[in-house]
Length: 444
View 1 (cartoon, rainbow, N blue to C red):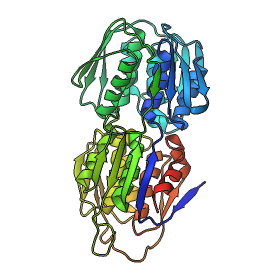
View 2 (cartoon, rainbow, N blue to C red):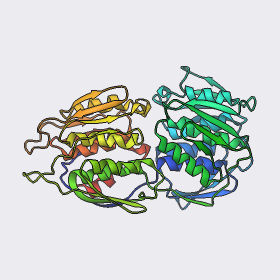
View 3 (cartoon, rainbow, N blue to C red):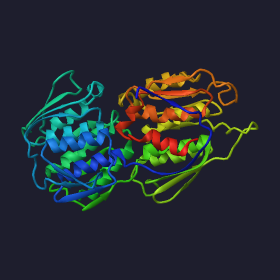
View 4 (tube, rainbow, N blue to C red):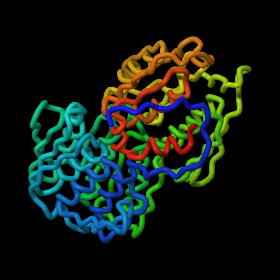
């Protein structure tokens, strides 16, 4: 489908179960492959990014057995092996950072010859800092294109290398997560020192929590250093239930902010490992009532303008470094705010599936917003009278830049006065193939 025209939305209410977390699904697939024993994964996300990881593991000789449906699998771990059964492979990893970065680290510390490549955008996403750290650990990696970026050629590890590696923390938290997973697998012990401020800390916290479930506990010195004990090894916990995707929860909770609610999402809540549950606090700052259980979150809002339409949301000025994916949802909600909103400390947006700061600025402007964008921030002044009833005007065609989150968060613009057309809606297959069906189930 080249485009999808969304009906004007006025109400959002209902309940739905979220698909599995992409971040947890790909991490647990890899950890299960590296662990001793077999691991049963339940409620695994079935999407483009997780299929990339599953196919890569299969190509490398890891047995991933489907148990009834694609969301329920059994992974047969490699155990004490420090390499993969297949010693030479060419892996195509699409635009899946949660597959490309950790597989680069693990394969670089193994004993085979591997080529790693992706789509054109993946070849624009930096990986030089991760490669530099891996080389300190004895990896042999060559650039097959522009230095500092994929594609990569990996040869068998030359030597153990240094017991201490350093990596920049201000580009992508996935570099630290990849090093943690891979260096623990070697069993040699290591120290990872982070240079500069670590971005997106909750994703590293998520990695550490999952490693602990697989038997490896890392000693953390704040966010500046991580110690992995020699002799560490991954052991299967038996069964892992993948929790729902907290980033995906943001769209439905935000719909409640615009369409009264209540909307309840199941699969994430107070006990969630994911940092994006913090988006609930952002909604509270905007005037939305939030209630939360161990594995559910509910949002509702009753404030209405004299016309009977929903009243504007409260404008905000927030550092969203800890929730960069859900911050995109907040940027679209800023169209419905009562003044200028500002999202700060989001430099990581520049190296995601697209340059999200530039893409968001361009698409918000189509709705009449005045947008200021910098290296690590975006500020949005909604169009005057955006929420006033009246003629709906010309349809806005929202470009999605082959970025799933652009498509999903701009579906919320259908609550505004302009008709909305989402271009290339199929890009949501990266993490949430059935998103628009789920959206339609709660929005009217």
